[in-house]
Image (cartoon, rainbow, N blue to C red):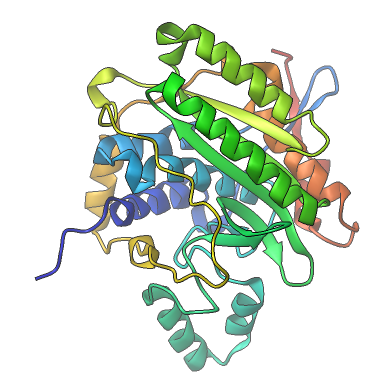
Length: 345
């Protein structure tokens, strides 16, 4: 008898629907806008972020399931596709498998129709193919392999963009020191081997910390800003301040998930089965989206140096600045063709 589907498998079905609806036919909106003062700004799609963040609350997915943090990863990869980067290069991809080398995708597209369909079907329905597809991106740093949450890479360039994400919804004073220590270690390990890659850190934080532990919030904000200023740490850091009601809060008293730690070379992809979205009917997914708990991003409470728009703009600009003008042409075109001038707010 089959066991109960994992929270992650359920979440992927809803995540994929939200992202697909936001980009019909794979066509993404241009995030770049020009302000009245001439400033070029990256405008994130906060509506999609708020929907994605509602998924783990709807599923009551435990923190240890990885689903709450995964919502941030899905949104960031969506935003980098909005910026114009190729869907096969930015991981996690918007469909299974979440990690697929661009060279394999290109080879599949080049095959004769019948063979192409067979290969594509095998890739799409197999949890993982050793050495080809995985559920997470593992990258060698200076001294050891680390799992990185959002990646853009190709064999010909190496990693161009690396983003680590972490999330806290409770027990702030107890968990914050561990999260900060992990982030410092991640930054040094990755930066020293990949100095040209855009290296970023995104921290999701429930907004009730502002009332419950204001001093801890101030300390976290200060450390996040400093992480983005040091020469050997991150190029940019970001705070996603999430507001939602206690009636839909994640299970209380649960420890934050431990950092995956140092990975052995060629680790088995044990979570690959969880990465396959459930084959559920469209009405079922639509009903889930319709009843997602309300989540609001508190932009006005977020320090300017940690604003998501500033972070995304800095990451995209750094990638484009570190590559020849013949690469990432769509991303360059989008940045050079912002939406009409908007009032300064």
